[in-house]
Length: 232
Ligand SMILES: O=C1O[C@H](COP(=O)(O)O)[C@@H](O)[C@H](O)[C@H]1O
Image (cartoon, rainbow, N blue to C red; front, side):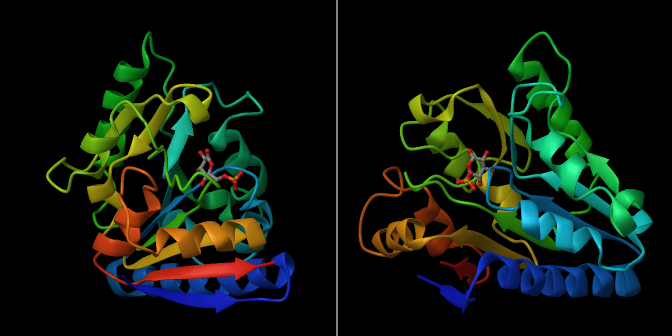
């Protein structure tokens, strides 16, 4: 079990601090390797962080940005993580970044996942930065309790790439990077806000099945300690 807690007085302070940490990681990767990569989450939590990160001055043209997970909906949908990232991150200095979407206009989510796997395989592995979110049901990425392909998604033997997921709490069919794609990130972050999610995390840190609270897979089996950014 491995997590490092970074706590802030409010979401705005958290967003700025996380943008500093992530911007520094991406800048260092650009300087040392000539390129950098980040996979980000959607949902309601990361908006302020995205806006802060977009203002960090670095050579964004050399940065690949993708999503940890996505709904099988087009970017115009207000449920689209692509849409959220386009509106809040891919602007200011970050407008130059190369965005690799998971959603593809395909006849099935399976076909879109295959296309997304091929597209994300173009990004150098491992990711320099992964920013995860978490739901109050203990899901992270689209690793939902009761998800149709949860076991496969969490299996370390499942290759890097994108698979589909359906679950009661998920709404639309999901597209999600697999655990093996995420667990070895150079900087692996969990961004959560509010007391309810802090309590969920405390429960996840207790003994229990990964399938009940899939965030446990990351807490227990990621290659590096999970950097938990939290504010009330
Ligand atoms: O379904 C999702 O939810 C989680 C958490 O979202 P939030 O609205 O509670 O911040 C998110 O990490 C994930 O990317 C998203 O698809």
